[in-house]
Image 1 (cartoon, rainbow, N blue to C red):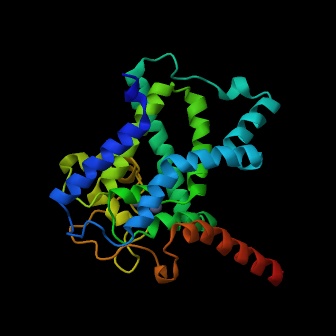
Image 2 (cartoon, rainbow, N blue to C red):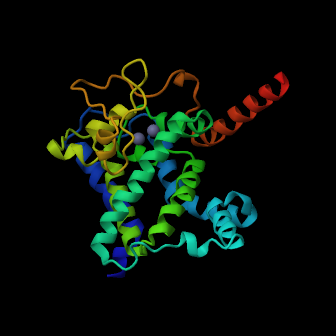
Image 3 (tube, helix red, strand yellow):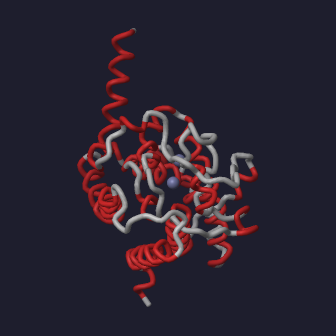
Amino acid sequence: MENIYNYYYWLIGFSIFFVIWERLFPLEKRPFWRREWYVDVFYIVFHSRLFGELLALLFVLVPALNLGRQFDEWVLDHDLHEVLYRNWVSGLSFWPQFGLAVLVLDLCKYLIHNTLHRVPWLWEFHKVHHSIVDLDWIGNWRFHWFEAIFYNSLLVLPVILFGFNPYALFWYGIVGTFVGHFAHANVRFRLGPLKYVFNSPEMHIWHHIHPDHGPINRNFGIVLSLWDWMFQTAYLPHRKAERLGFAAMEQFPRSLWKQMLIPVTTLFSRFRRAGKSI
Ligand SMILES: [Zn+2]
Ligand SMILES: [Zn+2]
């Protein structure tokens, strides 16, 4: 029974499920070892376990990077504990807590994702995710390490305000992983009317569309597509998504380590150029 709370079993189970689903009913036929598969295998290994451990080590060595902890200390220093730890939902049973966690945290993620696209220096980091050429379930794991820190640090605020219990958060994480795999999957599957509620491959592929082939900044939803329909950022045409990526993607590095470095070096050289022109 305790195994049910082991996130890695869920991750491995979902991954096997989507490998099989993509083989049986692919949207686009591709060889099993499609281009850049090893980059994405690196990403899933790096982000699912190694990254957590590296992050823990990094936080010990460079506490300034741990924005969540910085925030906690700031709260204590300013006597804001009572103000912020409101525990709005902590008295509720599991299901209402879980339902609210999905709604509240997913809305926050929708807003953060939107911001990652609209703030130029954040976009440099988020570009890593959009460097995917062939979308499939494993693409869910291609993102820059800074993006994980950025999302999780900002999500500290709603988590403490609402006081979600760890079980509600755990199951939100499991649902998030499943829908993340699903939304990126190369599968021929339509959700029907549920597409107005849940994110799906038919919607998320348009989030990745190359600007020469469709509008940018659409379909930001993570678990729920609801927000995109509500805030008019939804886009769902009935045609094939011809090409994925972003402008000048040809110059973007293709290896994991270079992709980890490029936002930092790009911003650093931009910063230096701005300094010289003053
Ligand atoms: Zn995006
Ligand atoms: Zn994506």
